[in-house]
Length: 256
DNA sequence: ATGACCCATGTTATGGGA
Image (cartoon, rainbow, N blue to C red; front, side, top):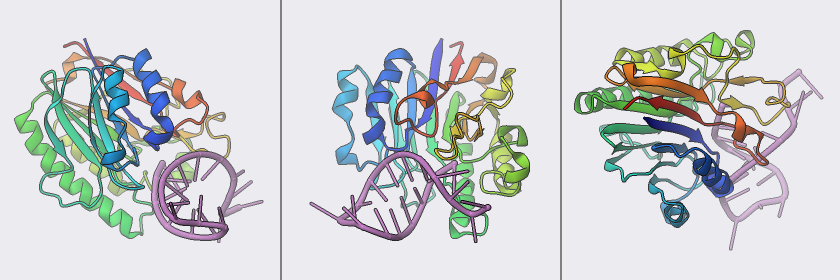
């Protein structure tokens, strides 16, 4: 049995105690983090090591930043997308127990008519090209992270209000389907799930209390792993913490 | 109601997130 998880922590400096608490309660084989918002010299490697975790990290000042935490050492570490020049620290990958684990903080895109949306589209093109190679090299692969894409209307609390808005545009959803077309499966949808399952709730407007959110954090598994998936769940508990991240972890369980 | 929050920044407002 193996477990892999993803969590956008929205500043690891703020959330480190919550991450360590969560790992103690949820001893997964690997956890990928997004939005650490730390330069590499400030990464709290010693704190993870003291708790018995291996860690790889890749960050920058103020924005973005990713990490790969694992019980066993990760090998063949990759940072960002080979073949796609990027100033922003958004991807970290490693092989853990024979499984290629890729963690990504996909661009937000801000608004469909913005330069940031153009960047998001180019980034997704680059990701897909690289993933095709990664899948050829590593048949057992999980792609996890904050995709900043709500794949379907059932992933949106108010699909009418969000129609055409960022995270819900046809272009973003087409990119998600193109990733699926590489031979990947949304592990969450392999199982019957509670309706109105979200992974993110706005800090504003009492959104969590009213359960107004989006499902934008995902775990995609390769065809080789798909028959091994026994569970995939969103863990809402950390969203109830004091000073929570606006995202909450997603966990997949595989019979390996 | 084009709002409401949270995080980082050598801040006391601004940009970004989603």
